[in-house]
Structure formats: structure tokens, C-alpha cells
Image 1 (tube, one colour):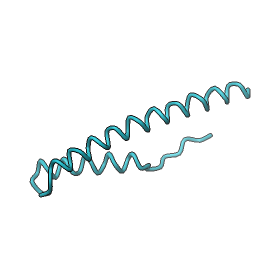
Image 2 (cartoon, rainbow, N blue to C red):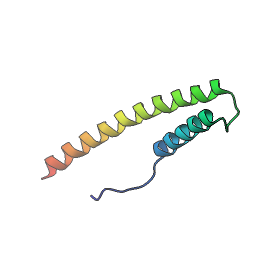
Image 3 (tube, one colour):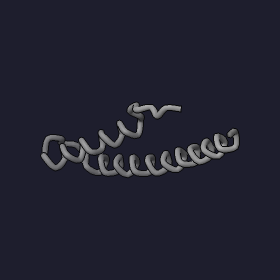
Image 4 (tube, rainbow, N blue to C red):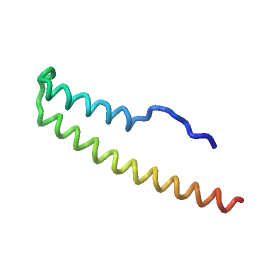
Length: 69
């Protein structure tokens, strides 16, 4: 199976979080920074959960492919 290079939902969330923090530091974005900081916390929690789910899927997929050989 070839590795696919596509942009996923997690990549979009990381990009948005980074852009929002850059705009915060540059003073471009004027919004509730409490909401933005909670959003960044949500992104971090989401990415940790997705990482563990993806890791579990990869380990199971690897074990199944080794067993099929």
C-alpha cells in the first residue's frame, strides 16, 4: 500500500491554530483570547486522541499484514 500525501482534518486544525497565534502576536486579530486559548487546548486534546487511534490502527494493520505473509 502506497503512502498517501493528503491534508487531513488534524493538519487543518494545526494550521488554523498556528495562524491564530501568529495573528494574536502580530495584533491583527482582535477577538476573545480566552476562546482562542480554549480552542488551542481542544486542538491539542484532539490531536493526542487522533494520534493514539492512528497508532493503534497502524499496529493492528502491521500485525495483520505480517500474519498474512
